[in-house]
Image (cartoon, rainbow, N blue to C red; front, side):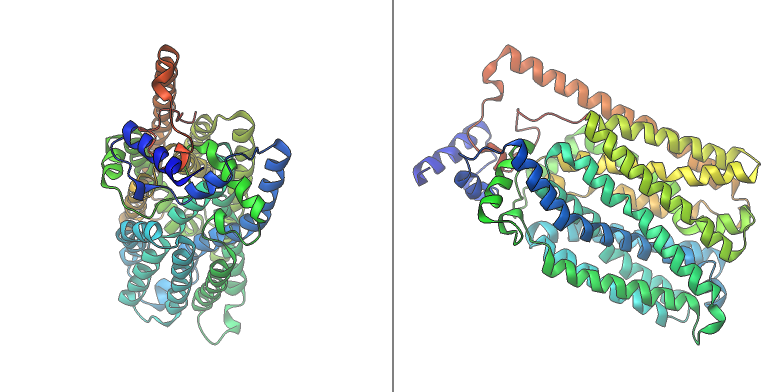
Length: 501
């Protein structure tokens, strides 16, 4: 295609939408022009997908496990003596979790902008290394103010990981592959829980053998692991498929063609105010926000008090509480793999997410309203199914919030933070050791969260039906120029776009 023809494509898009100019063209646009005559057969697609999974997935799985392990180190430290060693009042310990998410909230928007404007892999890896250093520094604190300050800095830099991985997933995978891939890396929270709990148990079991407190060693070990994988991520993961070192030149062009079906591209560095405005006019954004707030209140509470709940409420020893938390991690891994497979085979990921939230609701009811310890423990173990709801939301943001600025507005993660900020505060000192009001709050939150995902399903189905009807009535409704997928249009602007169910 000649330069004149390229400009004509841009002019056609300008005519269809007044918000697109030549400087807005997606990074993949030129590659799309070069690959326009290539046909991605099923065999080529399978080969590319296997290769991308092999090179990309193991690293992000381990990194997501590490970020969870780093985030909940205070949960493990809570039964390893940190409260006594630092003379923390019970309400101060609750503020360790709250301070982390307050900082996470504060870092979300500036870091999201950095991920869009700068090479996102380099930016994300730098954040990972810095939070690893901060985690190591936790071992040097001597009072409550010091540990809270350390948690604040940890929260700021950990706020990069989820939006960064959402961008990565949208660049490398087709829309129908998003749910499963996000489910796989998000379920690695369970791997982090198993690794972190095992390390914490081993350190606590041999605490008398060390010259320093075992919880300090826990922070150093987890921090060093994050630094190591942050450096690996910097040099190993390419900033976009168009520059992937592990793909041949031909495979890069095929990859561009492969992701055209997403009706999106590889990203655009320019911030577009209208996309931000559009995001907040979209009812889906508010559905994401409500879900993030309600579902994360239980998560925030258990993230800080899960081990203490097992220790004080269910009657296990401090070391036993660390061990008894491990099966919950296994449940999260299994739920991610199983639901990822089901959603891929059926294409009904919002339905899968809604059912998973209903399972979590059952778990919170068992934890809150039964007296038998085994019933409470069973409820505690199935609560991680709520994570599939997060996967549903993240997959929707990845696939259904087209337009790069709209994708990284981080509105969902803000509500995610607020929910996690509130969560630890529901575990009041006056309610110990049963914490019954906190457990009832979990039930109420999951009722709303489950209904919220069902509402998302209804909204998406109705809009898809409306667009299909308009297209059948007027064939010109969704006519678009060649390679429109790479012009960073939003889902409102691109009439070919259809939402997930």
